[in-house]
Image (cartoon, rainbow, N blue to C red; front, side, top):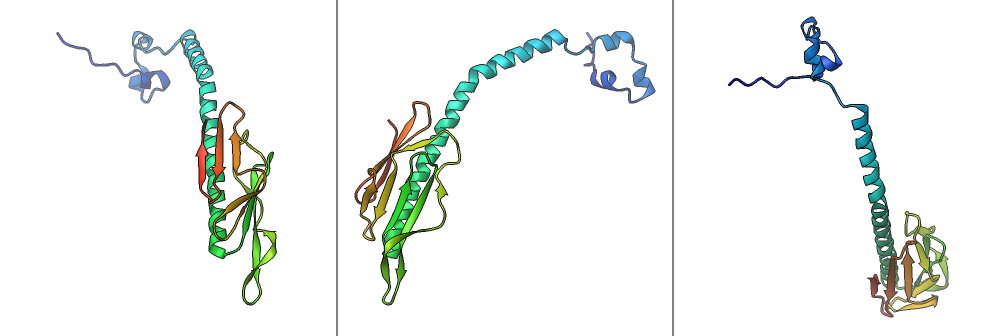
Length: 186
């Protein structure tokens, strides 16, 4: 038994590269037909249903990743501010405002001879965003003050912050009195 070689349909359907290829018989071209409109519509409908089913899961996953990234950003900002206070020998504050996605760092300026810390706080740069994704909120408004010895006090709010992403997911950031930062999810 001899086996027929596999037929190459694609060059004959789309273009005729040579007069010999254009002379392919009608029966050969009929065997090389494509998909019908009904078959394509069924495939598109199935794909639409699959996308509609998976879209909420994908959105919740994206929100969870944004929430985790925001919690990590807030925790690292708190730790960085504490390290700056210890390193410079002057007090620093970091202020988080509910309804805002930025934080502001302030420090006591070093001046004079011998160097001494000023009594008032001044902004260190502009407000810094702690999240770039929308839909994440922080509560309550909190200002943390870091002393040069690493001790932390809350001048406004508490030593705990809660981040939420609009759905049921939350992350709680707790700062101990000695500056240890812990992120938990209920």
